[in-house]
Image (cartoon, rainbow, N blue to C red; front, side, top):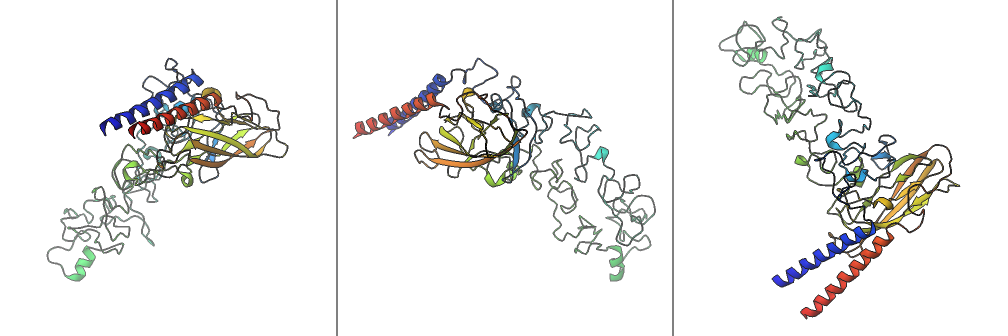
Length: 469
């Protein structure tokens, strides 16, 4: 058994070596380690940026439940090698808004947080603190606690204490200018609220009857928790909250706590509201942090409906795009497998009437992804060059070179249809994206070499089986 395992491992490494040799032969510059602008690995920014592509704009609303990506004018030559969560062309370690599309990186107040995601544009606040979680930072929020009373007039500016329905002002029983919601001695008798026999009436003390207790320990919101119970006071006195949950144990109930888990990230922007996760890591980009996400399904540009589940049958995806006439748009290719060898074929299904649009390098082979977006060889980038405004519908079909690593199916297939929406005046298009337009030229040499490698591997497998018999 041990000898057989060694033989299998030897075949695997031989096959990988043949594949790498095929890649190197087909495109010597594609994996050249000596060229820092074209590294053979995913950019980790340990030695500076791997290269930032030019863009013609940012993302916008789109079909399929996700975003529509604006054409990347470099056709992906450097774009494919970078970690760029928001697809704005600026690599994450250098992006001042990692999760918001802002190619220009505007930062009006110079606080290191881009205008696209700054909760106080024009007023420096690198910490981005937001007490009430309303999306407006504390340094520029006219109502810090979100109770409807401006900070200058609020007798508890950092503790919600709205005017009661039918009331004429905020509650301040002892008239000391400190609202009851934040006053440690509401009735002003010198005894703290939690130790006071009657925190709402300075004239009552000692043994109290039922009627007096009802006055001393009211339940303003009717949720069964007394506002100032010395044993278990209401965690949200002004909010109906019979469960009295307090995840972070800060004494402020979850029903009224702007940061339920106490991780410093306001509920409104926290991707795990009930589980502390300051780093906010979201590997599959579905808006739910890894620490509280029970399923990994990679989301491209917000399109939740077409997320890529690595455990599911082979799936391929390409996001809808926006571009202008005469500008070739790189057709992005995603799959729910990481770095699995595929052959691909793109087909232009429909175009505006009279269009002579060109589809460059529609066929080829890919074998490297980062993490789920596949990288074309530099001279084999698939691109649509539109000539008329309107909608262009395309289909991509992929087939595994070998067996699918999840299902075990040999030559597993998958397909997807996507849409490119084009603006601008009619124009005449030419071959500007490289390769032969509309023909089966994408990755021809590479495909042949990979086929040869697969055939050789199969022959060796059959020979090995015969020797064991």
